[in-house]
Image (cartoon, rainbow, N blue to C red):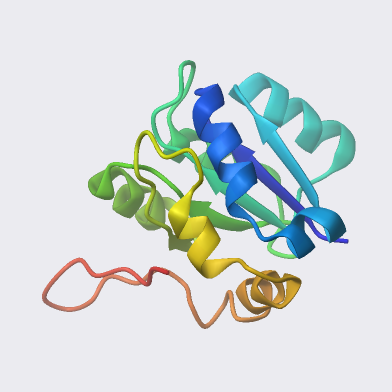
Amino acid sequence: MRRIWFIDDKEANQEAWLKGFGEEIRAHHELKTFGNWPDLRHCFETQGYPDVLFVDFFLHDYYGHEIIDWIYAHSSDDQRPVIVAHSSNWGASNGMCRRGADCRLEKTKGEKVSSSIQTHFKSPADIEHLIKFRELKRCTLQQDKEDFWQF
């Protein structure tokens, strides 16, 4: 069972994220949402890190890149989750990739179900693919333009 966590301060976004995953993923993985950074940090400190962490950029109490910076300062490579920048602002997602997120995934405001999650994470094999190929899919800045790997 993989642990897949999500931080976003808007409850509607948390619900859309949860509903976006396929039924098989919801049944066989721990999906947990957080509405603020102190609660997420507490879980890191008491339960360890998840396998995958989706991070929104604009949070009530912090910014996504600050969370990424904290994770890098307090974890080793083998502890660190796959970090997915998941903001409705493309520039914010790119910024999180530059700070250490492994990839970005489009988020559309106001969705009842996260269509980007629904499209790319239908089965547990999709989660395993993300984890297995994280090193191959690292965000990288191309020579002439910002074009980070994305789903």
